[in-house]
Length: 284
Ligand SMILES: Nc1ncnc2c1ncn2[C@@H]1O[C@H](COP(=O)(O)OP(=O)(O)O)[C@@H](O)[C@H]1O
Ligand SMILES: [Mg+2]
Image (cartoon, rainbow, N blue to C red; front, side):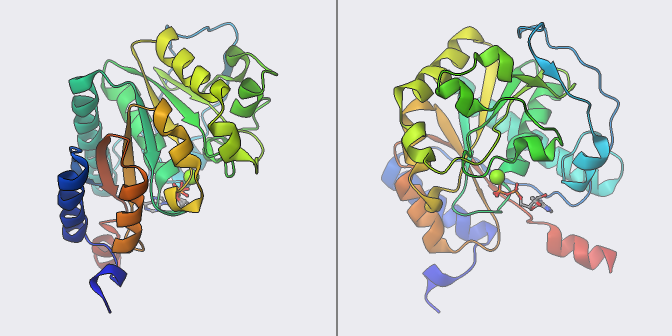
């Protein structure tokens, strides 16, 4: 088996990242997270920076979040480990973005199901709850919009309705009743999505989100890099990206991903599910 065909490990990712840094000049923040258990939380709603009158409020479905590896409060050793990992990730990401005044972070990864959406949500929640920043979480995985599924609600409008000029931004925003967190969900899957992402309307929307809410961090859940040209279409409109990989990814997939995102600053990476094997041994 050639070294490119091997599965990724933490050290092989770090190797690839060092090489990527040499060729692209990007700065990397090694992180790993694990999400094997979920906790419940007492959460109140308060978001002063958004147009409250129009933002739809949804009930916080703690049970649905629990089953989807979204972490709110520490309940036990495993949730403590996961929340701590997301806290480190949050600290590093904020430090990297603050260093150059970046405000929009694209969360992506080579392939499907590596944990991009899970990471984007946990990171946004962690920023909203544990830093002074407010977070806006945007679902731009137009082909497979999952944000509303994880939060367990049926959106009336999706981000495509804004891009197509059918609905103003305010009508699409949703409050999940987590302090300082707002969602901009997708709705139905949309096939012609990479074309839509590269339109002026999309970059106008992202620009609008930045300039309307200068204190707000915009976290964008996005499609897999290797699944099409969606991420390239977004590259001019975002400030940095976070790359999520897991053990199923191969080195050549990471290499190709880094090649495709070469003109986006890499704010860090996450090796997702890195502790699963350890927990399996722990449990059985
Ligand atoms: N660290 C983790 N531990 C356990 N399950 C996870 C973890 N990260 C993600 N998952 C689960 O894996 C599935 C795919 O994750 P998701 O975030 O939707 O991936 P992507 O957005 O990359 O397609 C979901 O069911 C999610 O709950
Ligand atoms: Mg996803």
